[in-house]
Length: 346
Image (cartoon, rainbow, N blue to C red; front, side, top):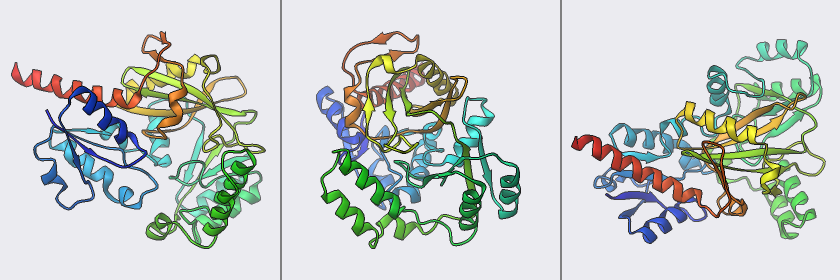
């Protein structure tokens, strides 16, 4: 058995490699950006790549490469069921709706006229989002019909930069005030007003659709539940000061008592329906205290979650112990390879 790993610093791959070294698993570092990537993995049973939504090269072809490798019969992480809707809120809308999964009511329009007609009868506020982005990038509150009209005109006009310069600066200011960064963060935010990111330069402007979600008030945090295989862990992400957004706040509460187990149960059940290897589910609670999914992802930061006190199994038993979800990724990939070999041998 040999596992191919594309390595990038500060991603899942650091722990995948660590696992292989500690458990004497044969692995090979590969370069998924190389023209010869198919040749590189020819002698491997699996390919694992923690690709990212903020790297323009990854957005161009990571899913297509992984789909192709999986189609050939090799195992991959993330696989098709885990990966196709990654960083695609529009895709997630259709998926969660058709599966009957508890999801915040969401509205997508592909013509300006349809959007404007809907705005006339819609109630506000609503949350405006672009289909992709992390850390609440381009997530804004349309407080009034006029706000929604402004967003819609821009969506079907000049469009939106892939990088929210003013939002980035405001985030830096808030993090400096909260002690999460030094004053140099503000200087970096000011510099980004004039120097766009490589991603924004290469990907162009986002336009041609508009996406709104119902605003669920009175939530000063969201609940993130992460499911890997048949295990789950969770924590609270507090909203930013004077803001409705929790994503990107980096203000986490890890106590078990702070996690509503209904969220854990829903996440475990949904993950089985989606047949996903690993999914991050973000929840808020509506006026009836019913948990609703905001959006999903296959990946996020690595190190902050080490502070979780334990995890739930799929019978909702809580195991108070240290754990490493990236090790679970590797264990599950190895198990699927062994299982398939066993089936072939029968």
